[in-house]
Every structure is written in C-alpha cells, then in structure tokens.
Length: 340
Image (tube, rainbow, N blue to C red; front, side, top):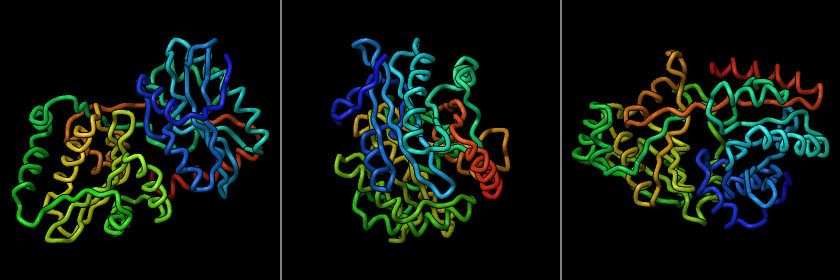
C-alpha cells in the first residue's frame, strides 16, 4: 500500500459518493473549518496498487491537556475486505507523523459498525478505548428516499400529530438562511439548551467558523423556528455527500407546549430531500439503557421521526508518550463532571 496527500477538493468529495459509512467530519470543508480553528489538517489517499481503498482526514490538535493526532469519523474505507490492512498501514504512518508533531497519542473516532470483528481490528493493533468520545458513537439515521407521506406515516404517532398541529398554529413559522445574523437567535436558545441538558456549548467563534466553512458550497442552512416572531427553536443542518446532518440544535423552554421544534425538524428533513439527500442523520443519541443520560429526552424526540440506530466502534487511542496517562485521568474527570 502507498499513501498520497490529497490536493484536489473535487476528487476528494467525489470519492466519498461511493463510500457507505461516512460523516461530514471527513469532508473537505470540515478540514477547512478545523484549519480556521487553529488545527493542522492532513488529507491522505491510501492506494493498494493503483486502486483507491481509503481516504483519511487527520487533525493535529493542540489542546490545553496536550497535543494529539486525531482522525474524526475515519478512515473512510472503500474496500471492506482490507479493513485491517488499511488501519495497520495508516497507524504506522501516523506514528511517524505523531513523533514529528510531538503528539502524546493518536486518537481515532472509527466510522466502523460496532461488531466483534471490527473491535478486534483495533485491539489487535494495540489500541485502547479512549476515556471520552469526540464525535457520536451512537447515532440515529432516517432513510428519506421515500415519499414525504410515507415518512410521515412511519413516524411515532405523537410526533406526526405534533408536526401537523404546528403547521396549523397561528404565529408559528420556520425560516431558512445561511446568514451569520441568524446565528444570533440560535445562540440565545443554544445556551438555554446546554444548561437544560447539561452539556458544554460550543463557542460563538466555533459556530461562526462552522457556518463559514460550509456556506460557500451551499452545504449548510440555519433553520429558525419562531412563535409570534420570537426564535424558540433553531438548528444548523449540514448537507454533504447525499446526507443531511442535524449537527447543532437548540430550543427554548418558554413555549414548551407549542411544538415548533417538531415542525422545524420536519422542514429540515424536507430540505434534505429537496437537495437530493438519501439519508438524514440526527447525530448523537443516548444509549437506551441509560435513562438518566442528559440526552435521554432529546434522543426520544429524535427517534420519534422514525429511522434506525447506527452504533460505531468506541473512540480508540494509541499511546505514543507517557504523558498520555495524565491526559487520560484529566479526560475521565471531565467526563464525570459533565455527567456523561
């Protein structure tokens, strides 16, 4: 196998169209976003002879807790019969990169189904489960290739009722935009949502840079759900490689009995269909067995629209330096503090 640096954006994006397991975390523009946030970005194409078998976007992250090499939801594998060889080859390459970048460890958020066989790949290569996850390991996805009426019919009865009810309520409206000014309404309800669901919100800079990174290619939209002119629900949706991603969401508890969030989500699904997407990804959900998880209520909301769960191999770490073990303890403590 050989590895080559990817230099052509169009070729990179086109290659993902034949990749089954993928998220926008391997998109070219997510790389540009991370550059804007101060990380180094590397894009690699892995070939077996002349055949392209995998793509991998890699970040060099400099955080307060230490420097590490990170593969967000990757590598994207085009030849499933060569998974072990691809990961092994990539690991050896990243070991050298890690030494050069003075990284304490290499971290993967694998985009592989959580099966015994796939878990074995990482264990056999010397990886260990990370103390935290960086991107969702359990997501909820909906096939939207069906007609709108079929999608509605397959929703939970209560969800379908609330969508229809919101369509009839005077004063409820959903607007769509990729203008930065619409982030103001999002940020207001986002802070309230973070407090209610006990998670640490992304900064204003983070949200602005994310919007900027995808806006030029018309791959992002901010939906604002209003009641009597006031934003009470908002979402940032990313459209990439025939999938719509509900990446950022927020809602106010002020008008909790007015089902604006349900209509907003339905409008997002319809927008994804309009853009030619085949699937709609609701992003992270809580494990079913953890009824006290901060995302339990939000997960119930997402599942109401129909669909199925996708469970990936847990985030994996490969140790490069003894400094890793201090970072491991720090991240464990932070996870407990956040009740995750």
